[in-house]
Length: 444
Ligand code: AMP
Image (cartoon, rainbow, N blue to C red; front, side, top):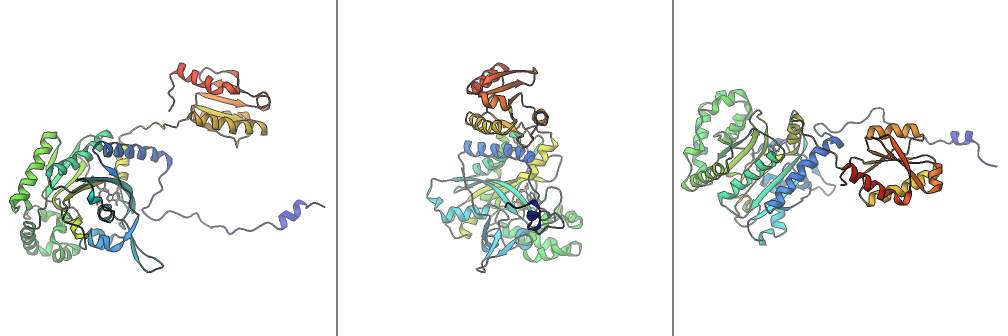
């Protein structure tokens, strides 16, 4: 004798249920489909620029040995001091979620012998990076960056080219009123003299410094120029400037970049307080921001010693990174419109089991010829499915009922003209293409 429903109920499995819905970790937002349309546009622009300027795309792991950043990003940087997510593996290794890309790219350059390629080696990358900081506007704990790095040339033309690429990226995305902030922080020959003067200056103002900066004074007075505290900020104007201490080589290098920027007609502002938060920069540092906002869209600079610091041969290099979330924010503010390239041109309706079987086959036929389709098979009735078709705004609807399924036909409905006709299923694609052509609807 068969089992009765009551028996099923009696044996029903009890699954443990969460009392509340879990949330993503603080500062690590989900990226939903609508936003991904915008992000895809950004990545496409990054990729096109990378291809045009001869960059190869590189991907490095999200986790790296912690010492890569201790050594590379630098022990006095804010990132290393406060912002790293560090994981201990079951094998007791210390790995860090990458807080930036540059040291990883240099590590990969060395590990994979990319230095054997013709120089300069140009690489671009994108992906998530992680920093433990207080989430606020334009500042997340997980965010995405895209990077352009040029390794193996000390020529200032590559500093200018890096800046130009980022500038072009933003103008490709229709951003206006961009401003390049640029400075030089010298090299190992001239920076120590500036360092010393800076230290003396801030020492004389010690009582006005915040607690963090009192500490920075001991380890790296340059970082004080980065401090957002009002009292520390007010001391910046009187601080000694790197430009007054540059060695002839650094002076020439800086002058040449400015000349290139002028030739390219790119707007720049020499910002003597711009030092950037990372320890490895030499000579050029830059940021690009909107004139109306003080959040940087990108930042970068020259890092002539980093390859050597990470165990390679002395290799001058320059590069930068842009934050994808900040670009998305600007695009949203500018009402940047992105059409979904997969917007359905056909909505497929099936009523009944046999019709559903046919519909699955037609769906495949449409996919093969790359006609974007939407469906709502879970809705049983014609009315409910038509309602969904309206929502998708597909210009054509294909209806398969029991009769059509048996006859191997479809009903092709023109939504704009509110007319419909029966078409043999074999001729479905041909008929659709003919109509798209007449309507001037492009196939993707
Ligand atoms: P940085 O690696 O600090 O030079 O930053 C390069 C770019 O990444 C910045 O110009 C921002 O666009 C972006 N960025 C940096 N930190 C964050 C963050 N916490 N959240 C979102 N974007 C960020």
